[in-house]
Every structure is written in C-alpha cells, then in structure tokens.
Length: 434
Image 1 (tube, rainbow, N blue to C red):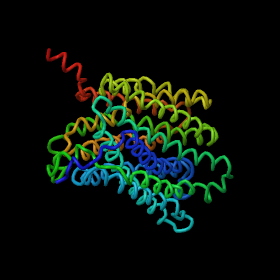
Image 2 (image 1 turned 135 degrees about the vertical axis):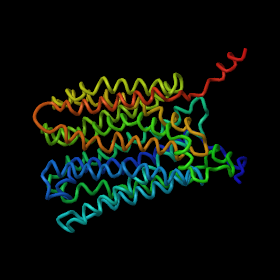
Image 3 (image 1 turned 120 degrees about the horizontal axis):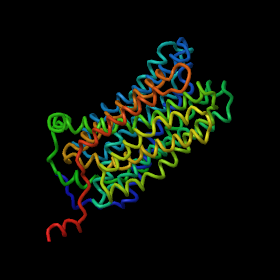
Image 4 (image 1 turned 180 degrees about the vertical axis):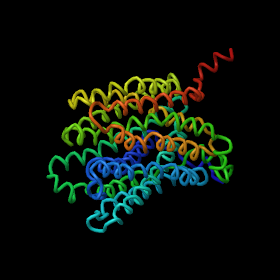
C-alpha cells in the first residue's frame, strides 16, 4: 500500500508544464504524419493509384492511428488505473516516439513494393496506440493534483500541447517545403520531421522523469479495479458513448481544417503548400493562446455550458467556413479556420477537467481516455476521407459543410444529456447551509 504522506506535493506550474511538453511532443508525432499524408505520402507509397485514390489511401493510413487510439486508451488506461498515472506518461511517450522515427525510415513503394504501405500502416497503428494512452495519463496527473477551484485552468495545460505539436510539426514542414525543391522534398525532405521526433521524445522523457504520482491515486491504496474496462463497460457505458459523441465534432472540425483543407487548398484550389500551411498554423496559434482563457471560463461558469456553446458555434459556422475556404484568399481562409478552431477550443479547453470529473477514481484513467479517443474515431478518423470523397466535382464543397454541421448537432445533443461537474465554490456551499 502506498504511503501518501511521504510524497511531496509538486509545483502545479512545473507539473502542468511537464504534462504540456510531453503532450506537445506526442501530438507533434501524430500531426506530422497527417501533414505528410496530405502532401506527399500518396504518390510515394500508393503510386499505382490515381492521385485522388492515392490521397484517400494515405488518409486511410492516417485513420488507422485513430482506430488504434481507443485500444491504446484501454491498454494504458488499465496500466493507469492499476499501477498509476505516472508510468503511462513514460511508456506512451517511448512508444509514440519510436514509431514516429521508424516512419521516417520506411523505404517507399518504389524500393520495397507493397511492404512499404504495410509497414506504414503498422507504424501508424503504434503511433495511435501510444497517443491513446498519453492523453489520459497527462490530463489525470494534472487534474488530480490541481485545487478544485482551478482544476479547469491547470488541466488545460495538456490541451495546449496539441496546438504546440501541430505548429512545431507544420513549422518544420513549412521550412522544408519552402527551402527544398519538390523533388528534394519527395526524395528525403519529408522524412526529416519524423527523425526529429527522436530528439523530442528524449527531451520529453527528461522533463517527465521527476514527476510524482497523483495524490488521488495514492489515496486509493489497494482499492483498484481488477479489470477497469469491464467496470467501465458495465457501469459507465452510457457515459462513454455520450462523451465520445460529444467530442466527435471537435475532432471533425480540427482535422477538417488541419488535414482535409490543406489537401483541398493545394490540390483543388491551386494555393501553394506554403500559404495553406501558414494560414492553418496562424489559426492554430491563436487557438492555443485562447485555451487558458476558455478553461478559466469553465472554472467560473461550468464545463457543460462551454461545451454546448462550442457545439452550437461549430454548427452555425461550417457553411461560412467552407465559403471562405473556397475563395482561396489567404486572409479569408484564415478567418474561416480561426472561428472554427475557436468553437473547437471552447469545448476542448474544459474537457480535460470535465471527463475526469465524470468518472470515479478507480476507473478514471480508462473511462476518460476511452471516451476521449472514441470521439477521435467518430470525428477524426473519417473526416478527411469523407470530406475528400464528397468534395469531388466542380463548385463549392457544400457537402463537407453539411457533414460537419450534422456532427456538430449530434455532439450538441450528447452534451445536453451530460451532467455538470464543476465543483461548487465554498462560498456557495456556506450560503446554502445558512
């Protein structure tokens, strides 16, 4: 049994920063693949397909990472609920980093034939497996250390990680695509961001080496679920389905902007790769900077209200976003992306506090992570594939807007059925008992 009193409480800033850094590194690994899938993987690994089919096939390998994420959340969630949140942070980072470096070493179809896309699929699966565990460990370790009245704020730090990871991944791609010829980029330039993942993973492990275990986990002693997934499925299946459905729109909007729109802008609108990456990155930077503000609003007004506002905003904005994208004008595309990602972060800034508060500590790592990553399958894995398919033909791709609006309305309904979890301020409790 753990001795709670021997564990020194860490600085919240240090702990939250370490969680943020590791999450940024793991999402860098995940996003760099998505950008490569949009720009270069189709012709290199699926050259026997038409350009459209090659892009769809590359996005299919992109989707495999999302399918693996719920499996990773089960695997690492079991570890987190049985052994602690801290081991999840180390092991998931190792797995994702190693798989990402390996992607950069895979020979193309022209060198080893069909083995090339097969290896790509396997490594993408391992990436997703690691990322599926990362989020639960990072968020829970932060949330379970944080004071109740500021849990939303501190828990939002890992949620800034995806923005940093995306900007870092696409910043490297932007520099390479701007400085290399198309032939150089296709020959070796696209591999550089994958190799860089090894250095980043080592840095992340160094940052996380001194983190201490969550006090809520230690307080449970030996009262751990024997098979956390079985308890989640038996007692919390409705909660898992509602959270997955609620989160689906966030993933759909984010990957429509960062993956599908990138490919659409370059291939269909004829906008340069550099301009498209710059527009998307600028919107993601603003989104990341808004994360703590939205989390503070969640601490003040509640988690559920912000989720409802984010879903409603996304539903109202998808048609205007597609209209602005179709102009091909950088400033208008940036505006479309920015409003969409602001709707996204209105929800996702508070999710890191909301999901852990919905589950009891003994199954929290599994329940929160499975719901979060199932939302990724529903909203993230299919969106680039469906959007690419329905945007064929001439004219503005209104089918993409309709698809995203429908997901937003589904998510709105799911959040409407979930309870509020924000801790009641002490002053309110005192006044209620007077």
